[in-house]
Image (cartoon, rainbow, N blue to C red; front, side, top):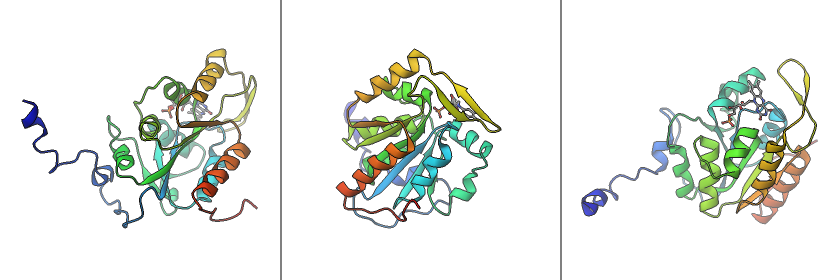
Length: 217
Ligand SMILES: Cc1cc2nc3c(=O)[nH]c(=O)nc-3n(C[C@H](O)[C@H](O)[C@H](O)COP(=O)(O)O)c2cc1C
């Protein structure tokens, strides 16, 4: 019966922050609403280091990793344990994207997905949310929270850093079309280079009267 189904809603909020935390994660101290930035990392080696370098210069950032990101980061010698002193790190350990509940708790002012694999770009462009980054992106949009996606496969020729060498890739029509489709999604800004990402973040910080932690030099 509908009434019985909803009778416990006040006692147990499945979207609450507490459930998003893994054992041992510190609770956030009380902070003003929408005062943190959610930065999602996907399993892309392309511009991974550059993206993390920008994240490290921003105030109050939490990282949200896809399962693929968790595998790819150490391949590029970026270890999650080494990120933890600088960021709170949320891993993709739930089918429903439990950490997404923190968006409902009004913690985040912006959701960044950088770098975004062509897989994640395709999902975001078609409204699919079955990973932590794609869930964060979709739910942010439904809440009117701006999303910034650094799509890597945006040019006909992309020179990318594989773990051992530089590789030339030729994104297919479908990858390029998905980027264009993503540009039309509500509350989403698509960027295609680290410099453009930095410029859009800079504008967002100014909108919020916030500042970078450090300069880029
Ligand atoms: C070392 C390594 C580097 C990768 N780099 C890229 C990349 O630059 N762009 C991309 O679209 N996929 C890349 N992939 C493949 C993605 O990780 C894979 O498509 C994965 O399913 C993406 O999942 P996600 O979008 O949920 O993170 C890479 C995989 C590996 C193992």
